[in-house]
Length: 449
Image (cartoon, rainbow, N blue to C red; front, side, top):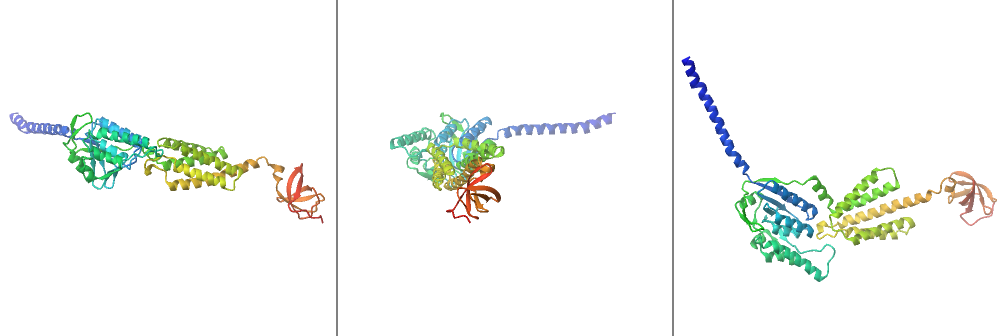
């Protein structure tokens, strides 16, 4: 008993104690590691590689909300944009300025730019950064609906400059250099922007950028100080939603125009062949999508009037026939209307001239052809049965004195002429009385044989 008891005490108990100690040590290590994992900073990343318009404004709003909900250390916006709409730019700049999470705008990769409206977003950021080989600036205001008078243009430019000064001073940026980008469309390389204190840092890639920004103290818009914690941060990319991808595709004016024209043709096809359902349903969907997309873009109402005039001219050409003159005028109006439909402040948001020309010519030709078929079909609806023979060519099978037999479209009919007609004479059916046709010679009459 003693031996057995001693053996248990010296063999089993130590092993249990060692196992318990191992479990406690593992638990201690795990407990010590969890805070380390929990303290790893998160940086949300939004890639803005598009024009500045309502869709990109919505993407930025969602990215800021998500970064605030995730308690991220910062929101990194990797930007490459030619610019865009002033109203969308103001909304996005305001969202950056009021964000509780520090916003880093990084112009990248090499070859990217922060042009026009993008320059305002770069200057609004808590940290403005660029990669070598990029440029920013050329932020002169371009009006969407033609050039106004000098007084109004001066008001627009002064408003843009005041808006830029309102936050550039708080960000400790070079106000004079920033205003020069608006007044004279001056653009800066990454090195020039850093030298003139328009940006805070240059970095060749995101990893080095976040490493360099770690422990950097920034001043928020409310004047408070905040230290960035970006070392070894876990970068989480904010992916676009399906809705944003669809809207980003639709906001392309060329796509919107193609949908509008294609949908209009399908709806017209449905009206001419009622009951097919599919063309009408698909055309209605395409037109609604086009209207929704165009609603996101600045539209010129004069261009809409040109499009309406084009449709009127094309319909008149098909109905009355103008030897092509009305159709050509309609196609010209259609081309001018499509070219000027979108009041684009930058070329990237305008309708491509090649798309406008090709679409106008094709749409005009197809519409004239279909309308002529429709008009001809409606005119033929009242000419059924014997009435359809009126106007047909005929041939005298025998002398008409003044009655006889004629051949009409391969059929033999009794006919009467106003005067005697020789055999073989070319005739035209001018009317009918029951089953007796009235005919007249196409050529000057000859004496009957």
